[in-house]
Length: 466
Image 1: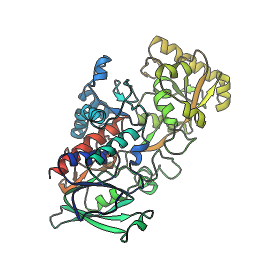
Image 2: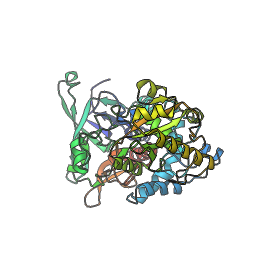
Image 3: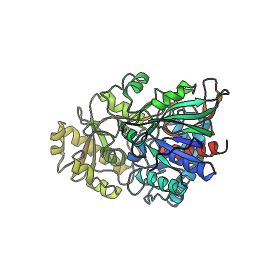
Image 4: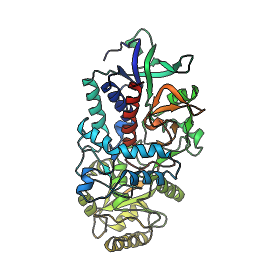
């Protein structure tokens, strides 16, 4: 790819994840000249390693399945999980535009989704959709193909370092720094580029920036693992703060309760923990052999409950549930993150759990599944829930990892960045995980991609029309 940069461009997008690519597409479709800069040597960022799930209400599949949903119900679920700290106008906009974003990803970008709608933790109804590959790669590659058709260049190995402003405070351009890997490709390692319309910040979260995240939440030091790529750092967020952008709820950092401590990064464990153990099976405290929470609570509730144990817990399901639910765990098994057992005593012995206590817990849950009611923790009993009537059984150690940073830059409904005086920063837009206020205290699963597409597209249109 060429390294030649123009002196001026209408719109620069910083970051090549879901939000950034969506913004670039919409800005280009609206007639603006656009380029994308990405600090890493490959596009996609954390978006590429996500499971690709998206939440949307009032879809065709919901209607075919007899599921009653609405943008108001989805917004209510997001605000309940967010403990009321969400900015209502932003949440409502995400919920209202969610179906449109889902259809856009399918019909315009070309992502192929599974013909199923799932209920995940914290949602009151099934409204979550997964791509065939169970990965964000299809959406990233589809959007990159759209940008290629639109002749929008994506410059890799190029970090945005400094925002430039005119006398009026309008953002007028950027300084860019080539990373060490690509400096040999150009005589000059730094460049300045002017913008006619604006800069869209889609640089992602800071889950791997230990010093910055620990400054917000002292508990989250280096000993706490993260599902994020190492590139999920705060440097461009801090640059936006330098010019007066208002930080919102930076201490609200979400842990993924379905992760495994037995692998680095996001790994394969979440495909078992999030898609099988939590919705269909159970999690137990190995110290007691008992359940201790509603496995379909939101991510904050689950993470807090697990952390209160003080040690990893065990997620369990059975073969019948896995087969009926239709999820493939072969990769997790081959990696050794998920374990298979031919009896309860064997499973209990492996994890150091009292076999009688574990057996009683599994039997009690089976009874509640058959009765259709969880009398202990009020977990919704799903079709295909585990009854543990016969082996094999499958289990995985679970311990939360830093997953999503809900806090970030304050934006308005047009994705314009807001300063400390609650005024619009002319020429600066933001979308995706770098923003704050949408998810409040806790983000519901599958709502991140929804938010990225909704506000990424809004940011692109807003910048193009400036």
